[in-house]
Length: 240
Ligand SMILES: [Zn+2]
Image 1 (cartoon, rainbow, N blue to C red):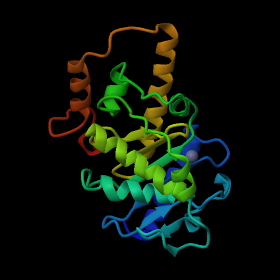
Image 2: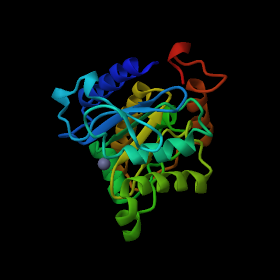
Image 3: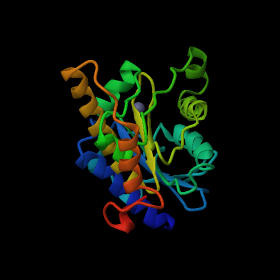
């Protein structure tokens, strides 16, 4: 997609976040990169959703320089740039990223607990637990809060050897979720899925504190039937 097309797609994806009930006030944003990774098109900071049009979208370079746009980009932009720079090596089709404060996923982030895979809904979207980062140190917050949020996300995925294509989301400790995908709209879908599985896990733990984990062969079956070379669920063009 060229930049004007990306502005349309990113604006629509931001409005989809509202449509899916993932946004309170202006707490959420979506961005999508150009195919060559030379520019990120992202929502402007603090602009009410009802006033968003493609024209308001901001285009930024990988170093954070504003290339196009009259507004400041989302304050989460440095986090996106940091995560993208590292994840793209493992997930070359990564294009879209989303940040929300959706209630159930944020509750897990605040409890600083990863979301374990308890059932097939989770397994369809995330190939294992959705990880949680470590908290930032006082110095990291003072020095470069948003960029260091990206660094601890990358640090967690590296430490656990996780594939960002198979686990397209994370919980920033004490903060909220981030998700990604091969487009802005796919990243939004993953944000919707993450909120749903976060709510389901929360309710599951309300019913029982201990129960068997989802069998690994069921996890593998559900993930592989929707993703990868042997996928057969749904229509081919909709698979990632
Ligand atoms: Zn936030």
